[in-house]
Amino acid sequence: MNSEHLSKRLACVASFVPKGSVLADIGSDHAYLPCFLVKAGMIQAAIAGEVAKGPYTSAYNEVRRLQLEKHISVRMGDGLAVLEKDEGVSCITIAGMGGALITSILEKGEQKLANVTRLVLQPNVGAQHVRKWLIDHDWLIIGEAILEEDNCIYEIIGAEKDGKSEAELNEAELLMGPFLLKDKHPVFINKWTEECRHWQQILARLQEAKATPEIEMKKQTLLKKIQLVEEALL
Ligand code: SAM
Image 1 (cartoon, rainbow, N blue to C red):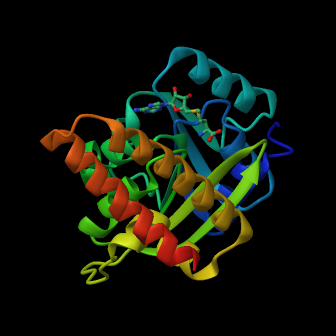
Image 2 (image 1 turned 180 degrees about the horizontal axis):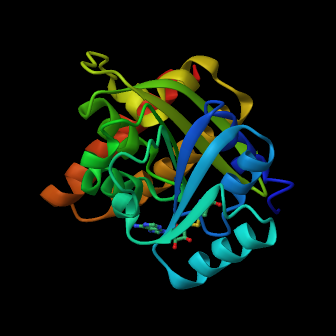
């Protein structure tokens, strides 16, 4: 993968970025995503944010290699702290991290989201945390995608500021995604069939363990999730 040829996963993230955006790609690593979008003429400008020195240097070098310094500002810092007020950022991408980390980045930097109209989030795990945060903070999920690459399954969530979101998600939609649940793409079916099988195995082990209130609670949680997924896969 490089800035000319994105991975299938990053290409899907890119497809959710509105044309003409001013983008902030947080946790940009090599800055492949903003470089690709600028080179393709899809976005006006971008900020590539990185918290770690190595990935920051990779991003900086990639932007220099492609002579995109006028269009992409590479910054080192934690989450949305790299953004200044009134920079006109309209879209933020956060990809390739766990859902809990994505959620904490959004939570810590919430005041930087005031003029952002689109979020594109790709949690590697824990997508339900991301959906819950979006709904709780009046962001409306406007689209989702699921894909498989190199034996990993990825979910991408696009959201727009809703002002006064009354969109509620039920438990199944939070867990599996409102759009993905409707589409039932073969990758979605594979993902949740496998998850369910895994949960059944854990449940079987818990059935054999000494019953304690903690074990009982774990069993109930697993049973609930298994039921939600089985209903979805019917
Ligand atoms: N976004 C790229 C992608 O999807 O291919 C890179 C994903 S890489 C697995 C995650 C990157 O996020 C790492 O380079 C890491 O240093 C960075 N990161 C983790 N926490 C961060 C934070 N709080 N703020 C900015 N970057 C962060």
